[in-house]
Length: 200
Image 1: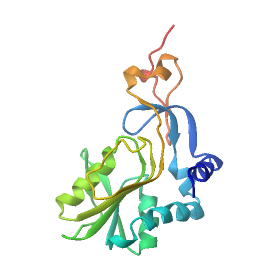
Image 2 (image 1 turned 60 degrees about the horizontal axis):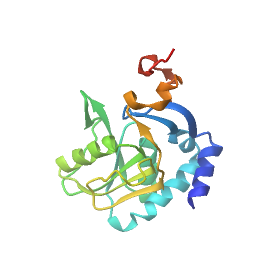
Image 3 (image 1 turned 90 degrees about the vertical axis):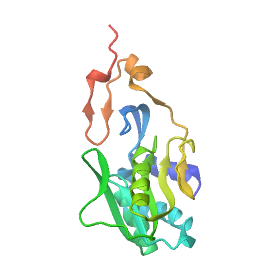
Image 4 (image 1 turned 90 degrees about the horizontal axis):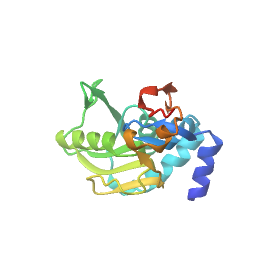
């Protein structure tokens, strides 16, 4: 699939949002990729994740890991297609941890998946977690890379289906805040008026 076809899927499912958003990273942006809106359709999850799988078929992957929560569906479908075990890390006491009995055995080949990369913070934490458990991180993959390839992860192979150069702003420098445009965090639709620089 080419970039236009993939973007068409996002638009048709309402997954590419326009407005004023607070990202998980804390940055602000006028665009938001809500991958869950695409991945709720098994046919699209299968199509998109197959692109990831094709790039890692020769890596003998034992485990597919992901940060909770958005990337869980990505990892599950990638793991299904690879016939590999799938686990996820979740934040506890401020740090990513494998819980629920999930484990990485020393020497296992691990592919770490994410839905959307902005700063790469969450996926980088999971990569380091796997390494600290003596797992062999063979690569990292995502559906969308909002940094257009600028975020570099310390892995042998890094792949994103869709690379986009989308502007992100620090809250104190956000032009959308300066225009007094209400900000939301997609998923919760919560408004954060304290992050707007209200101009009378």
